[in-house]
Amino acid sequence: MKVLTFLAVLLGFGSMAQALEYACTTELACITTNGCEASAAPVRIVLSNDRAVQFNVGTAAHAMTRLAPATGTRVMAYGPGEAGQGLLALTIFDNLNFTYTSHLKLVMDPASGVKRAVNVTVLGKCNGGTGAWTF
Image (cartoon, rainbow, N blue to C red; front, side):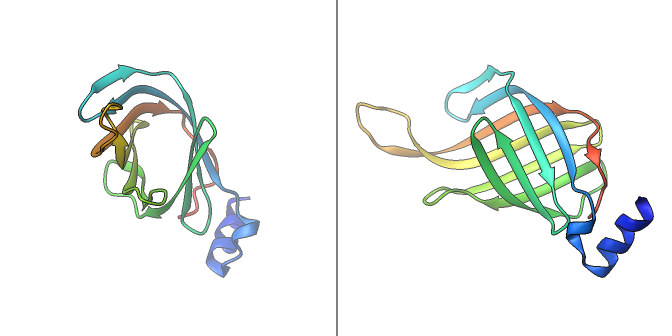
């Protein structure tokens, strides 16, 4: 199977190669102005052969582009947020801890209705991943 996966990637046949998927669990959810709270939500991170990364938590799915991993990391990715929002970033480290960050404009004071720029970060832990590594 590894030979077929390698050939598929080499020849550009992404559909023949298997994606890599991590099942993860959040541990903390943080908003820059409000601190962090304990969290235990399931997260699914899927890496496809065309460098696409899908970060799924609850019903939300965020598309990102995978970068070549740096020393000490397994996955690094970035992407645009939803319309009117900022960037997304994801890192899965060698020890399988992950951090996901989103730059957002949120209404932090409902009385004023004014949107404020904040950084939302989710920290957690992943399993070893299933499927084939196909950077």
